[in-house]
Image (cartoon, rainbow, N blue to C red; front, side, top):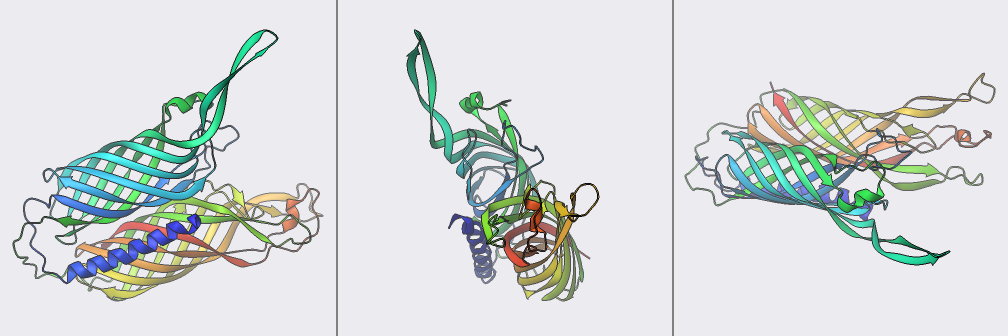
Length: 434
């Protein structure tokens, strides 16, 4: 069930946002005043780059891994420029148990943001101490003393327990204000984790490990001043046909392997989810306000390792192109999307054949057909700016690899079957219209 939780949380996020914004749009909206609302309550999606296992040997330092989660945030604006806020995130994916991590994660950050708030957007810096709690960590639970040849020895006893580490989240925040009561927010920063007394069990220990974290979501304001809104201009600006954007993307790759049993060579065994964080760009052309075609490309700099009989591995490059259809309102829009494309892996093992001169294997790029189906939620803080959230299923069609390369010496075996595997993807970004 935990493997499906990120998809469920993201779906609830899209549905909740669309419902709440629709309700807000139907209510009279007071005009923007000098002072912002004091209280904000928000929900968001978060990606935390765990990276390689800290201090472990035989681990490629480029083998990055992220975890996807969801959370809530409470903010209190002391002034237009300074606010106190508290944020809690839950990352449901179960990680292997080590001295510095294990199980699922619960994160809490509590601190301040300070910056400049303009009419339709704001830019802030943040500094928030907190904690990162793992449900299963290998930790010393006691000692045992024994005597051998007249000498006394004391050895540690280890067990699995829940453990929290001190964290410090430092970074930047960009906010957009499509309406008086709604704000769209993007956070990026360095979440520094202090391993504390666990460092003595880790090779090459460091006091702080640095984790890149990206968070995006929406918030609702309360206790707003009352003056009536005087807004005769349409924020959706359907006349602008072109849109160029940049986005952060989180792709949860479902890793799998094929059976080593010669009697069942094509049996697929799923190993877990390897979430990768990336970035990219998007171009959209709108035929009418409710229908558009778009091309999106994303690059994932982390190394996924390899899986699927070495049919996938290395760095991921993704391109999707297709249609977006839905309903555009004055301050927001809700759409569905269907976008065919390709997902390309940089380092896959290819079989040269039994009679090939030299090495039988080579590393090469493999590209597979993909289909992205999901939903899109957009906000329009101004006629030229759009903030966008995407959630959906990116289906990748793997197959065709010679499974004989998995055996030494190679043996004749049928190629891997062509089949679709489902992968959850979430993207968040900003676009500009012209």
